Image 1 (cartoon, rainbow, N blue to C red):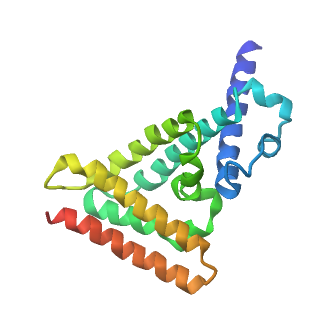
Image 2: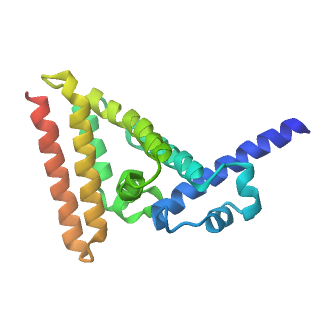
Length: 196
């Protein structure tokens, strides 16, 4: 019986983390109270502290989980090298990505709040975003390999900013044009690396 209880607790914790990650991306960290997060997971408020020491503890785990999911979604199916980078850029700056808040990039959805969060949340973000960044950097063929990580971070910043702005615009045609221009800008950044 104890084995079932342990597995059940792990599954419940996992469900809370996953549903919280989606809620945070939709409503923001500050806009998502513990009561709502637990309700999303089908649980009562009282169950929260059996799984997390604080809301910040949950935020750190949810951010890490969302970045892990993004890594799997973006990188697992991408081709190697430049072709894979182009594929990732086009997937990231697609109208489908922009229009689906549950699947939105945690960077585009939450960076401003993560930047104001306690160090543990920022560290969870940093640790997990660098996994994605290192995957992107490995696809570059830079003249200066030491700069690949910084260039990959710059690319993510460019992509996340473009996605955020495209979501804020009320004119769908202008938003689509911005996404396409963002793709061209990102490919130009990547392309300069391929030829340097």
